[in-house]
Length: 284
Image 1 (cartoon, one colour):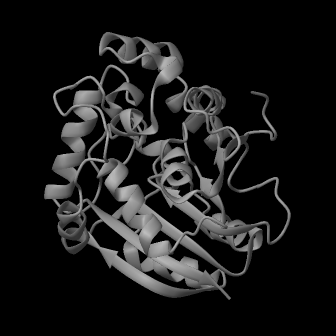
Image 2 (cartoon, one colour):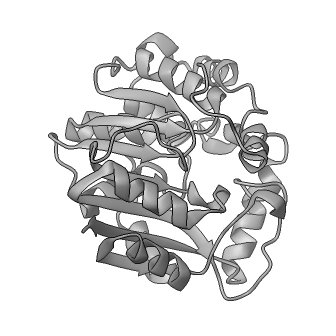
């Protein structure tokens, strides 16, 4: 899938991080090894694999409920990866979703997965920078980010771009890792092998940057309160792959050091180096 932008050095580093995993062949192999034919795979079967963020599909659906996404909403998923959340929203809510992602490998794999799940009429992919979105002003009703902003240094510009492409009154919903009171973070983590392309900020700074971009706050919850609330609703998606299919998990996106990345995520949470945040804002 051709680029629609020239990547900055920082963006090139992020793309290299996410392009190292030979995604599509590995995903095909994992599905077939577990008795799932790629050409007939369902969104629910893919959900444990392609909702690459904390609480998986349950986190996606919780964010969608808070953002009050309707079937008529044209939704933008910024940093949407291979499009698992987009396909989930298109299936469960009937909305159209455009996935914007920096990494060509993710967009190409996402397009193929969308073909397999027969959702090309509702889910599309654009390979471009979140800081230079190739969309007209006011093009979307809702914009989402899920575990994506940790790789973006210029968050003020990011939120300004999201504001620009939303219609007046449109909603912006985020679900991301934020910086905890104890620093620095232990690396590697799922979004970065080292600190040079990890840009987490404290919750108050994120909140201020979003409101300064022209948004009013509708919902805000962080830390253990958020994790407890999400855990209560983290039941498997109906029809998902059996819980015993251990290979169907997002570790496929993390490379050979996936175990270290997951261990450090848990350690960073326990030591208050990262906190989970979720918020919904309305474009003024």
